[in-house]
Length: 67
Image (cartoon, rainbow, N blue to C red; front, side, top):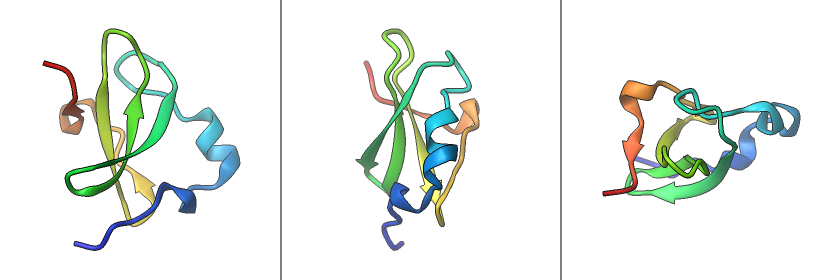
């Protein structure tokens, strides 16, 4: 699988994206499968993968990053 950067997301879109679970801001990150968006919420902390420059913002597909 090739690593896809979150830089391919349009800046205006990137500014309005929020975590679908808790509505907190998302930060660019890199996870085990490549580029992802990481929730900055204090209680959530889910990471959402980015496939071909498209963020997969489905709560049920979010990767937990906290114990």
